Image (cartoon, rainbow, N blue to C red; front, side):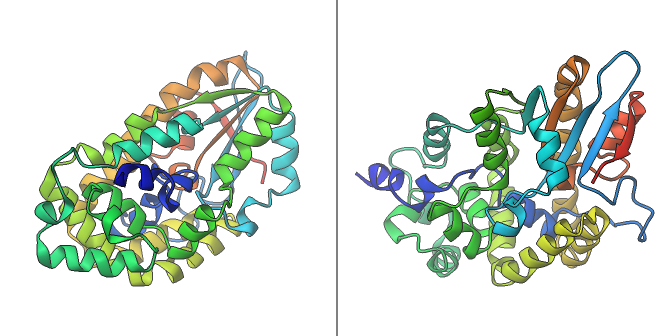
Length: 312
Protein backbone atom coordinates (compact mmCIF):
# COMPACT_ATOMS: atom_id res chain seq x y z
CA UNK A 1 0.00 0.00 0.00
CA UNK A 2 2.77 2.45 0.91
CA UNK A 3 4.72 1.62 -2.24
CA UNK A 4 1.58 2.15 -4.30
CA UNK A 5 1.11 5.58 -2.73
CA UNK A 6 4.77 6.34 -3.39
CA UNK A 7 4.23 5.63 -7.07
CA UNK A 8 1.44 8.20 -7.17
CA UNK A 9 3.25 10.75 -5.01
CA UNK A 10 5.35 13.76 -6.09
CA UNK A 11 8.33 11.39 -6.12
CA UNK A 12 6.73 9.36 -8.91
CA UNK A 13 5.89 12.44 -10.93
CA UNK A 14 9.39 13.82 -10.70
CA UNK A 15 10.75 13.66 -14.23
CA UNK A 16 14.47 12.95 -13.74
CA UNK A 17 15.17 11.96 -10.15
CA UNK A 18 18.39 10.03 -10.70
CA UNK A 19 21.09 12.65 -10.22
CA UNK A 20 19.36 15.99 -10.61
CA UNK A 21 19.86 17.07 -7.02
CA UNK A 22 23.40 15.80 -6.77
CA UNK A 23 24.58 18.51 -9.14
CA UNK A 24 23.65 21.00 -6.44
CA UNK A 25 25.13 18.86 -3.67
CA UNK A 26 28.30 18.75 -5.73
CA UNK A 27 28.62 22.48 -5.15
CA UNK A 28 28.55 21.85 -1.42
CA UNK A 29 30.57 18.72 -0.91
CA UNK A 30 32.63 17.79 -3.92
CA UNK A 31 34.33 20.76 -5.48
CA UNK A 32 38.03 20.96 -6.31
CA UNK A 33 39.83 24.29 -5.94
CA UNK A 34 38.87 26.37 -8.95
CA UNK A 35 41.48 28.19 -11.05
CA UNK A 36 41.42 31.95 -11.35
CA UNK A 37 39.00 33.45 -13.85
CA UNK A 38 39.94 32.71 -17.43
CA UNK A 39 42.29 29.84 -16.58
CA UNK A 40 39.84 26.93 -16.58
CA UNK A 41 39.95 25.04 -19.89
CA UNK A 42 36.68 25.44 -21.78
CA UNK A 43 35.27 27.53 -18.95
CA UNK A 44 33.19 29.86 -21.11
CA UNK A 45 30.42 28.41 -23.25
CA UNK A 46 27.65 25.80 -23.33
CA UNK A 47 27.61 24.57 -26.93
CA UNK A 48 30.80 23.25 -28.51
CA UNK A 49 31.65 21.89 -31.96
CA UNK A 50 33.92 18.83 -31.90
CA UNK A 51 35.56 17.52 -35.05
CA UNK A 52 38.53 15.59 -36.33
CA UNK A 53 39.77 14.38 -39.68
CA UNK A 54 37.60 11.80 -41.35
CA UNK A 55 34.51 12.49 -39.24
CA UNK A 56 31.59 14.84 -39.75
CA UNK A 57 31.44 17.45 -36.96
CA UNK A 58 29.31 16.86 -33.86
CA UNK A 59 28.34 19.07 -30.93
CA UNK A 60 28.52 18.84 -27.15
CA UNK A 61 26.03 20.83 -25.07
CA UNK A 62 26.11 21.43 -21.32
CA UNK A 63 22.75 21.11 -19.58
CA UNK A 64 21.37 22.10 -16.21
CA UNK A 65 19.06 19.49 -14.72
CA UNK A 66 16.12 21.78 -14.02
CA UNK A 67 12.64 22.64 -15.26
CA UNK A 68 13.23 26.35 -14.67
CA UNK A 69 11.62 28.29 -17.53
CA UNK A 70 14.68 30.42 -18.22
CA UNK A 71 16.86 27.34 -18.59
CA UNK A 72 14.51 25.26 -20.76
CA UNK A 73 13.99 28.19 -23.16
CA UNK A 74 16.69 27.06 -25.58
CA UNK A 75 18.74 29.74 -27.37
CA UNK A 76 18.28 29.79 -31.13
CA UNK A 77 21.83 28.55 -31.77
CA UNK A 78 21.14 25.47 -29.65
CA UNK A 79 17.74 24.87 -31.26
CA UNK A 80 19.17 25.06 -34.76
CA UNK A 81 22.01 22.68 -33.93
CA UNK A 82 19.67 20.19 -32.27
CA UNK A 83 17.19 20.35 -35.16
CA UNK A 84 19.95 19.53 -37.62
CA UNK A 85 21.48 16.68 -35.63
CA UNK A 86 21.39 13.10 -36.83
CA UNK A 87 21.31 11.71 -33.29
CA UNK A 88 20.85 12.87 -29.71
CA UNK A 89 23.06 11.41 -26.99
CA UNK A 90 21.91 11.99 -23.38
CA UNK A 91 23.19 10.86 -19.99
CA UNK A 92 20.20 8.52 -19.72
CA UNK A 93 17.05 7.95 -21.77
CA UNK A 94 13.97 8.32 -19.59
CA UNK A 95 10.66 6.48 -19.91
CA UNK A 96 7.74 5.63 -17.66
CA UNK A 97 9.26 2.22 -17.07
CA UNK A 98 12.60 3.73 -16.08
CA UNK A 99 10.93 6.19 -13.71
CA UNK A 100 9.10 3.32 -12.06
CA UNK A 101 12.35 1.38 -11.70
CA UNK A 102 14.04 4.40 -10.14
CA UNK A 103 11.29 4.80 -7.57
CA UNK A 104 11.48 1.09 -6.77
CA UNK A 105 15.25 1.35 -6.32
CA UNK A 106 14.80 4.08 -3.72
CA UNK A 107 12.67 1.90 -1.45
CA UNK A 108 14.14 -0.07 1.45
CA UNK A 109 13.78 -3.86 1.51
CA UNK A 110 10.65 -5.18 3.19
CA UNK A 111 10.96 -5.13 6.95
CA UNK A 112 13.44 -2.24 7.07
CA UNK A 113 12.58 1.33 8.00
CA UNK A 114 14.59 4.52 7.71
CA UNK A 115 14.46 5.40 11.40
CA UNK A 116 16.29 2.23 12.37
CA UNK A 117 19.09 3.05 9.93
CA UNK A 118 19.60 6.74 10.61
CA UNK A 119 18.73 6.85 14.31
CA UNK A 120 16.10 8.97 16.08
CA UNK A 121 18.02 12.27 16.15
CA UNK A 122 18.89 12.21 12.45
CA UNK A 123 15.37 11.03 11.60
CA UNK A 124 13.94 14.15 13.25
CA UNK A 125 16.22 16.27 11.06
CA UNK A 126 15.06 14.28 8.03
CA UNK A 127 11.43 15.03 8.95
CA UNK A 128 12.20 18.73 9.28
CA UNK A 129 13.86 18.87 5.86
CA UNK A 130 11.15 16.74 4.24
CA UNK A 131 8.46 19.15 5.39
CA UNK A 132 9.82 21.68 2.88
CA UNK A 133 9.05 19.21 0.09
CA UNK A 134 5.66 17.95 1.22
CA UNK A 135 6.87 14.35 1.52
CA UNK A 136 4.70 12.60 4.13
CA UNK A 137 6.20 10.64 7.01
CA UNK A 138 4.78 7.29 5.86
CA UNK A 139 6.67 7.61 2.58
CA UNK A 140 9.87 8.83 4.20
CA UNK A 141 10.13 5.85 6.48
CA UNK A 142 10.63 3.40 3.59
CA UNK A 143 13.12 5.45 1.55
CA UNK A 144 16.83 4.69 1.44
CA UNK A 145 19.23 7.32 2.83
CA UNK A 146 20.82 8.03 -0.55
CA UNK A 147 17.39 8.73 -2.07
CA UNK A 148 16.76 11.39 0.57
CA UNK A 149 20.19 12.87 -0.12
CA UNK A 150 19.12 13.43 -3.72
CA UNK A 151 15.79 14.97 -2.74
CA UNK A 152 17.30 17.32 -0.17
CA UNK A 153 20.02 18.38 -2.61
CA UNK A 154 17.40 19.94 -4.87
CA UNK A 155 15.73 23.23 -3.93
CA UNK A 156 12.10 22.72 -2.91
CA UNK A 157 11.03 25.01 -5.75
CA UNK A 158 12.59 22.63 -8.30
CA UNK A 159 11.05 19.59 -6.65
CA UNK A 160 7.68 21.34 -6.82
CA UNK A 161 8.17 22.41 -10.45
CA UNK A 162 8.81 18.85 -11.56
CA UNK A 163 6.14 17.34 -9.32
CA UNK A 164 3.66 19.78 -10.89
CA UNK A 165 4.55 18.55 -14.37
CA UNK A 166 7.42 20.87 -15.27
CA UNK A 167 9.76 19.32 -17.82
CA UNK A 168 13.51 19.57 -17.12
CA UNK A 169 15.93 20.55 -19.85
CA UNK A 170 17.24 17.02 -20.52
CA UNK A 171 13.68 15.79 -21.02
CA UNK A 172 12.89 18.76 -23.29
CA UNK A 173 15.79 17.70 -25.50
CA UNK A 174 14.66 14.06 -25.48
CA UNK A 175 11.04 14.95 -26.28
CA UNK A 176 12.12 17.24 -29.11
CA UNK A 177 14.28 14.52 -30.66
CA UNK A 178 11.52 11.93 -30.34
CA UNK A 179 9.03 14.26 -32.02
CA UNK A 180 11.41 14.62 -34.99
CA UNK A 181 12.25 10.93 -35.15
CA UNK A 182 15.90 11.58 -34.29
CA UNK A 183 17.89 8.59 -33.07
CA UNK A 184 18.31 8.54 -29.27
CA UNK A 185 21.24 7.07 -27.35
CA UNK A 186 21.92 6.89 -23.62
CA UNK A 187 25.45 7.18 -22.22
CA UNK A 188 24.68 5.55 -18.89
CA UNK A 189 22.01 3.29 -17.49
CA UNK A 190 19.84 4.44 -14.58
CA UNK A 191 21.40 1.66 -12.50
CA UNK A 192 24.88 3.04 -13.16
CA UNK A 193 23.82 6.51 -12.09
CA UNK A 194 22.17 5.22 -8.95
CA UNK A 195 25.23 3.14 -8.09
CA UNK A 196 27.29 6.32 -7.68
CA UNK A 197 25.63 6.82 -4.31
CA UNK A 198 23.75 3.57 -3.69
CA UNK A 199 26.94 1.49 -3.54
CA UNK A 200 28.73 3.76 -1.09
CA UNK A 201 29.28 2.32 2.41
CA UNK A 202 26.43 3.12 4.79
CA UNK A 203 28.52 5.52 6.95
CA UNK A 204 29.41 7.50 3.82
CA UNK A 205 25.78 7.58 2.72
CA UNK A 206 24.80 8.94 6.11
CA UNK A 207 27.57 11.56 5.95
CA UNK A 208 26.22 12.70 2.58
CA UNK A 209 22.71 12.80 4.00
CA UNK A 210 23.93 14.94 6.90
CA UNK A 211 25.66 17.31 4.45
CA UNK A 212 22.50 17.60 2.36
CA UNK A 213 20.31 18.30 5.41
CA UNK A 214 22.76 20.87 6.77
CA UNK A 215 22.96 22.65 3.41
CA UNK A 216 19.27 22.42 2.58
CA UNK A 217 18.22 25.83 3.97
CA UNK A 218 20.80 27.41 1.63
CA UNK A 219 19.86 25.41 -1.46
CA UNK A 220 17.52 27.98 -3.02
CA UNK A 221 20.07 30.85 -3.21
CA UNK A 222 22.80 28.41 -4.28
CA UNK A 223 20.56 27.12 -7.05
CA UNK A 224 19.78 30.66 -8.21
CA UNK A 225 23.48 31.55 -8.28
CA UNK A 226 24.24 28.42 -10.28
CA UNK A 227 21.38 29.20 -12.66
CA UNK A 228 22.72 32.71 -13.22
CA UNK A 229 26.19 31.36 -13.99
CA UNK A 230 24.67 28.79 -16.34
CA UNK A 231 22.60 31.35 -18.24
CA UNK A 232 25.73 33.49 -18.52
CA UNK A 233 27.48 30.42 -20.01
CA UNK A 234 30.16 30.87 -17.36
CA UNK A 235 31.30 27.37 -16.43
CA UNK A 236 34.27 28.79 -14.55
CA UNK A 237 31.84 30.68 -12.31
CA UNK A 238 29.91 27.46 -11.71
CA UNK A 239 33.05 25.82 -10.40
CA UNK A 240 34.15 28.88 -8.41
CA UNK A 241 30.75 28.83 -6.72
CA UNK A 242 31.24 25.15 -6.00
CA UNK A 243 34.63 25.88 -4.45
CA UNK A 244 33.21 28.60 -2.20
CA UNK A 245 30.29 26.47 -1.07
CA UNK A 246 32.48 23.48 -0.20
CA UNK A 247 34.47 25.33 2.46
CA UNK A 248 34.32 23.51 5.79
CA UNK A 249 33.17 20.15 4.42
CA UNK A 250 35.10 16.95 4.98
CA UNK A 251 38.03 16.78 2.54
CA UNK A 252 37.94 13.00 2.16
CA UNK A 253 34.23 13.15 1.38
CA UNK A 254 34.86 15.86 -1.19
CA UNK A 255 37.54 13.81 -2.96
CA UNK A 256 35.49 10.62 -2.94
CA UNK A 257 32.37 12.27 -4.26
CA UNK A 258 34.25 14.27 -6.90
CA UNK A 259 35.90 11.12 -8.23
CA UNK A 260 32.65 9.10 -8.35
CA UNK A 261 30.30 11.88 -9.41
CA UNK A 262 32.42 13.75 -11.92
CA UNK A 263 35.90 12.58 -12.90
CA UNK A 264 35.30 8.86 -13.40
CA UNK A 265 32.00 9.58 -15.15
CA UNK A 266 33.73 12.04 -17.50
CA UNK A 267 36.07 9.28 -18.63
CA UNK A 268 33.15 6.89 -19.07
CA UNK A 269 31.19 9.49 -21.00
CA UNK A 270 34.02 10.16 -23.44
CA UNK A 271 34.53 6.45 -24.05
CA UNK A 272 30.85 5.84 -24.70
CA UNK A 273 30.15 8.86 -26.90
CA UNK A 274 33.12 8.00 -29.15
CA UNK A 275 31.11 5.73 -31.51
CA UNK A 276 28.45 8.42 -31.94
CA UNK A 277 31.07 11.07 -32.67
CA UNK A 278 32.61 8.70 -35.21
CA UNK A 279 29.24 8.48 -36.99
CA UNK A 280 29.15 12.27 -37.11
CA UNK A 281 26.46 14.93 -36.65
CA UNK A 282 25.70 13.84 -33.08
CA UNK A 283 24.29 16.21 -30.48
CA UNK A 284 25.68 15.17 -27.09
CA UNK A 285 24.03 16.70 -24.01
CA UNK A 286 25.49 16.20 -20.52
CA UNK A 287 25.50 18.22 -17.31
CA UNK A 288 27.45 21.46 -17.72
CA UNK A 289 29.69 20.64 -14.74
CA UNK A 290 31.15 17.79 -16.80
CA UNK A 291 32.43 19.97 -19.64
CA UNK A 292 35.23 22.19 -18.37
CA UNK A 293 38.52 21.66 -16.56
CA UNK A 294 41.61 19.54 -17.17
CA UNK A 295 39.64 16.34 -16.55
CA UNK A 296 36.44 17.59 -18.17
CA UNK A 297 34.81 15.99 -21.19
CA UNK A 298 36.03 18.65 -23.63
CA UNK A 299 39.66 18.44 -22.50
CA UNK A 300 39.51 14.65 -22.72
CA UNK A 301 38.15 14.87 -26.26
CA UNK A 302 40.86 17.34 -27.21
CA UNK A 303 43.51 14.92 -25.93
CA UNK A 304 42.02 12.30 -28.25
CA UNK A 305 42.66 14.50 -31.26
CA UNK A 306 39.39 16.38 -31.55
CA UNK A 307 39.36 20.07 -32.36
CA UNK A 308 36.96 21.76 -29.97
CA UNK A 309 35.51 25.21 -30.73
CA UNK A 310 32.81 27.23 -29.02
CA UNK A 311 29.53 27.82 -30.82
CA UNK A 312 27.50 29.43 -28.00
